[in-house]
Image 1 (cartoon, rainbow, N blue to C red):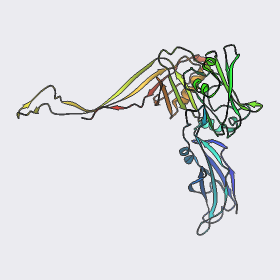
Image 2: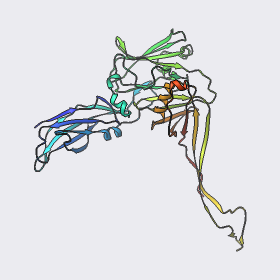
Image 3: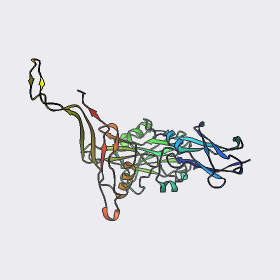
Length: 387
């Protein structure tokens, strides 16, 4: 008797893509043979399943249903860096089950993987390799923002980014501020706590609170860079340009969950138009009524059509500044297709919906710099008194 685990998902796997384990047995010819699967989530037995051989002696089990409900949106707290709290561990135990009556026989247990809240496109999932991002020399930050484009953040805006830190501790995140000539203005480092996924708040206020860097240092700087120190080497550098453009229309800062699982940020800084849709609930009654003197009278205060309830919902149309085509392509795909979007407007954070039902990915050869307009559902339904 022997069960063999043939393959497991990658050590870090997106929760909402296939989470497929494959396995085989040399006992499939026995009567009433079936694979009996135990699914463990966070070390706890969470479900049992029966799977029949599919390809000769081989079969597979997809744990996506457990993964997607067990992982949440990354946590955005008040700390400079914190656990993203967006992941859990999964493994399966596979039994041979056969005989008359059928009973569990030999078993094998898979290795443990970590699933995290993300959902890549099919093509991106096929190309996914967690080692491109797992903490190490020249590894990437967890973002799909085009690396050839400038990332902007104003002095007062929120700025979040994430790294697959793979439970590494004892090292540091390094922060360097530069002036317009590329000279270092100030720098500092912060020790990293051991988390699988770490979310960093890289706003100016957060950095100032966590380091020796001051507001005067930022005032003298044109951009700043961050990277994770791994001893004698480093991860890739993330550069943030300080946006000091005039805020004529009150900036709308969007925070949204991207397909790769990170919290991304982008600002729409131009004109805003806010509208409300109104829905009325009413009825039609006869014209005229009896008064207290037993007379049937007609008056203007008692019309035929009357409302008993009025509801309204708001939406906002906002416009970006002129942006590069690569940024536009990234923005429409990641923002418009995200189920989790927040908007910071006048210092208040709102959970909102993106109402755009389609988008166009612009092309460099035809469009150059472009603007993007998004329609936002404000999730602020109001209703009148009921009469």
